[in-house]
Amino acid sequence: MSERYETLATRIHERFGEQMSRVPSSCGELTYELDKDNLIEVATALRNEAVFGFEMLMDVCGVDYLNYGSDEWTTNDATDTGFSRGVQRGPVILDEADEFDGKRFAVVYHLLSLQHNFRMRLRVFTGTSNPPMVKSVVDIWNGANWFEREAFDLYGILFDGHPDLRRILTDYGFIGHPFRKDFPLMGNVEVSYDADEGRVVYKPVSIEPRTLVPRVIRDDNRYAADLKDANDG
Image (cartoon, rainbow, N blue to C red; front, side, top):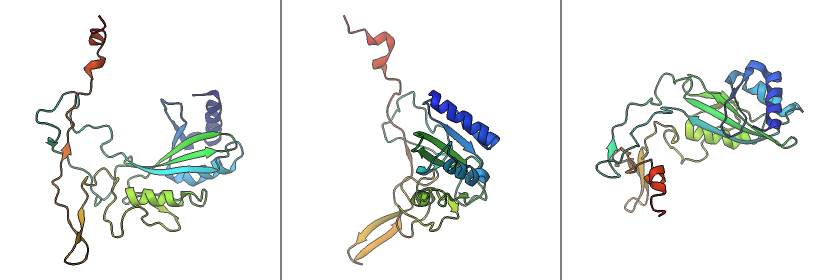
């Protein structure tokens, strides 16, 4: 990480202390995790205090960490019966659960300081509540309005204090949140035009649910050390 960003990290630690926890980065970026109860206080300070000056919110996005880091199939060997061999998926947490794992849903904020030419990222986990919820930052950065609506639409994350929290990408009457990891890949309904009724009709989806296993070997032997120079004469 550059000296400029290390200096910024030092200032953040001196100002916020234990309120913000630095997340290790392998690409030279500055990312912090904080409790959702501290979000409004920290965000306001990052925007208003001259030493930081993060006056622009570039993006707000949701993340679903359900089954994060786990594999549904082994990828080091080719499959026996082709690309479309399905695997049995394990049980997942449904929307009807009383509560979620505290580290399942997160909201990520991408900040930009024009005056100092700094970028940084904040990550806030929503906790165990169902539905997941964090405070809205619309009153701090007005540009969060549509970003928060998108995170609500796709992940079902509520933003307390948002002036007009409603879906923004999915259709009217859409059921569920399509970016959740337990949302069925083929959806819940099929949409088609019925010529006899003269309108669009909805019916239960008829596609059989399955997870596809790619017919590939991840370690490409073209790059193996003992084969690389074999044809060089």
